[in-house]
Image (tube, rainbow, N blue to C red):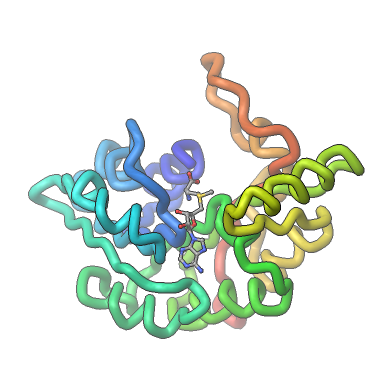
Amino acid sequence: MARAVRFLACEAGIRQFLDGGAGLPAADNTHQVAQRAAPECRVVYADNDPFVLAHARGLLTSTEEGACAYVHADMREPRTILTAAAGTLDLAQPTAVLLLGVLGHVSDYAEARSIVSGLLNGLPPGSYLALADSVSSGPAHREAGHQYAQTGAVPYQLRGPAEIHGFFAGLEPVEPGVVPIAGWRPDPSPVPSAPVGTLGGVARKLALA
Ligand SMILES: C[S@@+](CC[C@H](N)C(=O)[O-])C[C@H]1O[C@@H](n2cnc3c(N)ncnc32)[C@H](O)[C@@H]1O
């Protein structure tokens, strides 16, 4: 997440972020990484988990120059998310949509694709998608996913690499493309290793997309 957000803020000049499936506050949340690069960045977090809602205050520690908001909503309703986000973001301006470790919660691939297109369709050319998701790397991985689902947790759909690439269809890929995330523009200093079997990338919405 941090490397993608740093790229978007520092190199792509993005100042607005929509972080879908934000999760619980962590040490370095999207707004903190973005606002370190550019304090005026505006960030909207969205999640549908009441537990995340209960801890959302930890996601709302914006700089004075920027803004942060939390939207309690379901990604399956991208229009609702965009309408709520418009209270904080100017959706006529390029915006980065972050979907990191989220779309596996949407088991139907067509529906997951429609979430991506529904969000990007509401944003202008020059907006970005940063997406990462787990891929199925073999029978052991699939079995782990199966056992995870049996714990009562919301099942997480492991997808094939072609499906992860498919989320970026029609967008202009940012180098190095969709790759195992540990290899996506790695920091020069050693970092904790990323989850094995997670593919991700960043891509830009084109004028005629
Ligand atoms: C694995 S966590 C990822 C959190 C964060 N993006 C990260 O990379 O660390 C997935 C998050 O997606 C949220 N989520 C799952 N399905 C969702 C949906 N339909 N709408 C909104 N959020 C959802 C979950 O509540 C959870 O907080």
